[in-house]
Image (cartoon, rainbow over all chains, first blue to last red; front, side):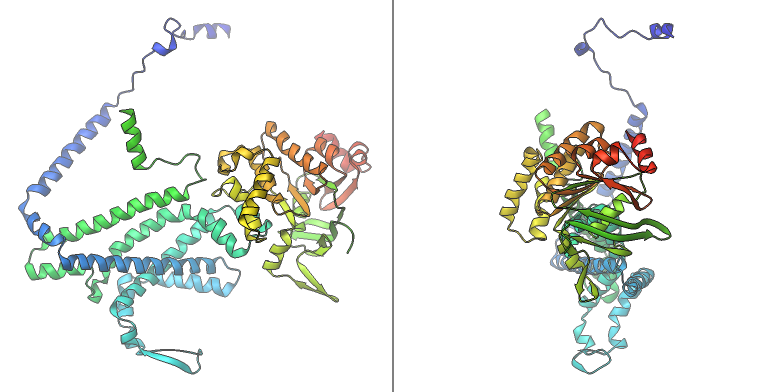
Length: 308
Length: 254
């Protein structure tokens, strides 16, 4: 046994520790892969820049055109409306789903089942044609007399039908996302809040929801970005959102590719903004959950500057 | 009503087919410290959770400070209280959990201030001043703006004690307050509890620290299989147990 100890390689006692130089491990395969990717990227960039079919001058002419900007505005409005309505209703669905009342649970489950099962485009067409189904909407006592009634056609214009359709569809998914968030919070948190006598609504808003947000935000951001693109389905209702608008322009001018690029650029821009917002929202809700927060890109830049 | 701060009468509780408490009586006088001892599964923690109505007893009644927990009595009828009223009753009872259960997204100060502000509607400035005072008392004046996860287990448990004290409760309940701690951190938490005992705080402590129970408790209650086997002053129950079951437990733990 003692001879084993003696056979160990001796520590480099000759050199003092500060003077030892660390040689980083080399990764030749990583370098080769990086080189291949760099060439591919250069080829793609070259193709985009030189192929005349992309027709960048036309792209430049249309990308900030008034009708396109208005269409981007409408896309944003629809997204906003759909997301807000979707997550508000989704939160209600999630609360119903974890409620004590079996009827509320069943209704929530059924809603989720129906609205997740039917394709969005089909749902939108239903809302669009609601006037055929019910030509009058009235408010009053259920099954009793009505106080006021509206003509469905005038009450539900296409924008509202689209926003409603997107929101109701989104709610089915949002409900599950919010529910997953609730489940991710340790039961001890609710229990501690209850033991302290904190009112029920406040337990939910102040204790559970902020901690659930850590689970909710990444998936919700996925859904919101999905919604930005999902609004393009609304073209079936002839609403001039981004996708519909570029189609209108290219059927008139015949320049298909550059106008598809216009739409592509805008969708990219919108999702980029959303991704940046997501980073900061996630960072906000991570406070307390991580020992040290990840630096923001700005902080990283400054740190790099100082080191250089 | 009875003169006891905590009065537990004939309490039964089962989870499914499993009986956890089988007719338990327990009386705690104001200013006294009661230690609940017993092997795991003996129902100690469940009894504690019944006292502040985190669990509901199947049979029997519990009153704290002369007020029946979870029910309102009118004549010969007992009306079940609404959640809101139960929450109000709980503000008179401090509860310290084994796993601290601090609110991770709130700072230490916010953890302590939350309940006085939201449950007792105290002005925030007043609640903050009181919170700082309590945090100083548990030796954490310098940690008010930290998040709980940046503290050691012992520090977290001391914050939890300050949080429970912030409601100025009539009684404090401790559910194995040192079981989740590294051995060298146990002392600092016990020191805080010892300090509270000296100040005359009414406490019920579920613990496995027999030495601590002997030193601090006025009464030791030994539970086994959902029944109180033996109770009395620590010198009696721990040093001269009458019941064979208690003797076996004390011998094994000490």
